[in-house]
Length: 117
Length: 117
Figure: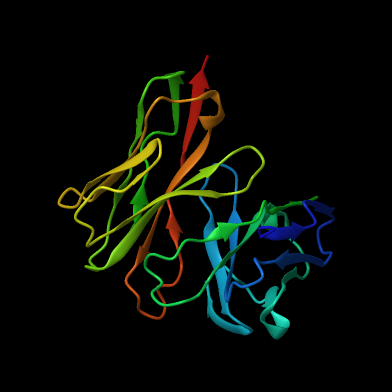
């Protein structure tokens, strides 16, 4: 068990550029989540996958954001035409995905810190 | 409406003392789960403890215990015998029921705990 891995750890980009982040979940985990965390706030839900299917998207996920999880393994989060307001920590989490959601523990990666200049 | 409220932005505690971090929540769903996560400066969210709404006993995990007062809708985290390594941000989170659309974990704004030697 190598934990949830996210790359890159830090990304600095200029406004208007596209960026892509990658998340490798724990290998046997079926569910994968993306969260965004701004300074002084708790993480906010962005989207969620059950295997390769994207089942829920937050209103925070504008049409400039797209997430994929091909083959139900790793996931990518792309932000097109970045804006300064996109600057945040982007956290990925995974969970086993068996049975009830209520008590399901999420395992988080260390996040990708995005700075848009 | 805020679903998770953490009213202590920061706390300073002497090493080896016990500390209580406050969390109140708001839900009309009879089935829900409450979680506490620790976020050190490295950024990774680390699961600490879970309490289900139907659990009769307060949850305990080593030095962590959850003081669950259902009628008051509070789920305070108690850390006994604090250590320097406990210095971090602490987040309370909730997931409501097992209904599709409730898969997301909702976080509070966190409490920054600093342990003083």
